Length: 329
Image (cartoon, rainbow, N blue to C red; front, side, top):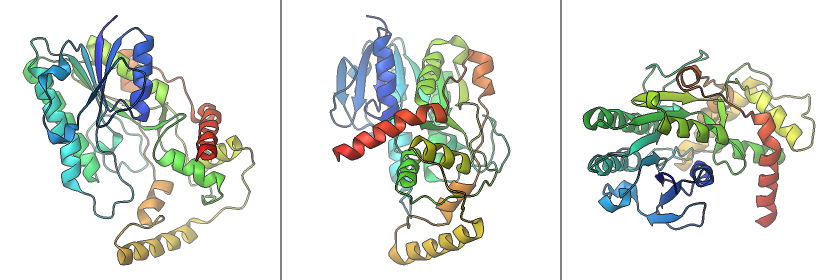
């Protein structure tokens, strides 16, 4: 058996894909999660990292740590719980780093961060360079965790690397993309016109390959890398691709932006009255029409990483998985 790897958040979408690849390469995988689950790993440990205590034996004989666990951005929160993000993303990372640094031979560590650490970049192509401050408690917590990781690397001579993947697609993905796919399927997604916005995405397999390079290449030590599939997707383009993958041609009729803006303001009002965000409000409109466009040139230049996936190519498998889930429900 090859290297022993600890994967936190192993039961999640990306965690399972990473574990599957590691096992396929002959590495021993110790999976860490809050509960228990079946999956592609040889060992399993249950622990809530947000408690801020990591037993030393968890990292016994571990060569590489892939830290994927954390609290993700909850789009339904009207008033985000900053304390919960701090515990799950900052305190948990601090405890894991302390346990790793206490080992006689500290393991290499790859931290899966987020593009949310970068604030609004407008319509410009952004990279790893510092930009506007994070706009959300989630983004602020991930940025604070990044700083802890880099500081631990310098202080203890650890090989650490940070990855900032774009929104990840693939069968079984969670979050905005599967929600959009379901909305398009049920004809509940507004047929937007082409607005020229640009959003970065990335395939799950490409993120896994980036994580392996980040752990294995000396050039990655102390570095931060954005990971995208190199394309710029407009919301209209994604809508058209999803509609066609679902087996139908998108209609020519579109909803003008001014109409959506009015609906968003109404949603804001409903949210204020109800004390919880409405399904469509100004924040949702910004996600639909805004840009979040990033370059992954740095990881390509320094580690030789190249994307191999596109959303269009991944959609048939995503649609099949989505329909299988609906049939089983």
